[in-house]
Length: 242
Ligand SMILES: [Zn+2]
Picture 1 (cartoon, protein in one colour):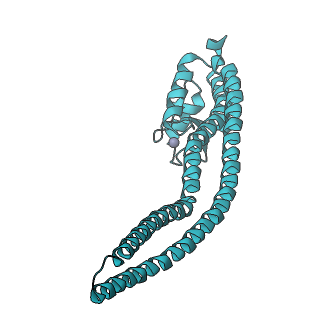
Picture 2 (cartoon, protein in one colour):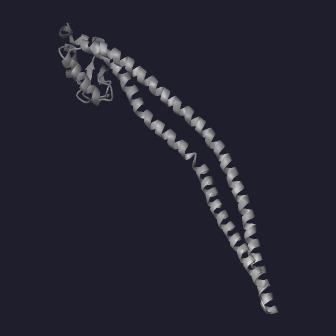
Picture 3 (cartoon, protein in one colour):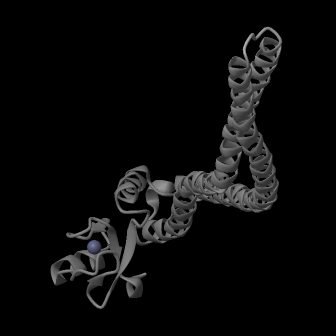
C-alpha cells in the first residue's frame, strides 16, 4: 500500500511529518540550551558568595593577628616578672634605677599592645557582624537560585514530555512514507535546521528565499518525483498543486 502512494500523497505526509519535526527540532534545541542556563545560574549564585568569603577570610586573618598580639603580651609579662625578680639582687642604686626604667619601658610597650588587642576585638566583632549580615544576603540569593533552578528543571521535564509525545506521533506517520522518500527527507532535515520541506511562494523557495527557476517549478507540477531547491536542497512543493 505504501509503495502506491502518489508523489502528492507523499508530499502531504511529509508536510505532516515536517510539522512534527519542526516542533521536535525546536524542543531539542531548547533542551540543549537548558544545561548551559543551569550552569550560568549556578555561576551567578556562586559569585554572590564572594563578599561572604572575603569577610570570612578577613575574620581569619584578624584572629591570627589577635593570637600573635596575645603571644606578645605573654612575653611582656614574662619579661616584667623576670625584671622584677632581678630587682632584689641588684647592688647599686644606679642598677636599681636602670632596672626600674627597663620595667617601665616594657610596661609602656605592653600597654601599646593592649590597645591593639582592644582594637582587634572591635575589628573581629565588626567582621563577625559583616559575616552574619552577608549570610542573610546569601541565604536570600540561595532561595532565588533554588527557585529559578526549579523553573528550568521543570521546563526540561515539560520539553522532554512534549518531544516524547511528538516522537510517538511521528512514529505513526513516518512508516506511511516510502522508504526512499523518507530517507531523502530525513537527510535534508539533518542539514537544514529542522526544515526539510517548504512551499514555493510566488516563485520563491520558502526555505532560502531564492527564486525557483520556471523549469524546476514545471518539474514539481509533473508530480513524478520529489523536487529539491537548487539553492538550499530542501524538498519544494506548490501549495496550489496539492
Ligand atoms: Zn531553497
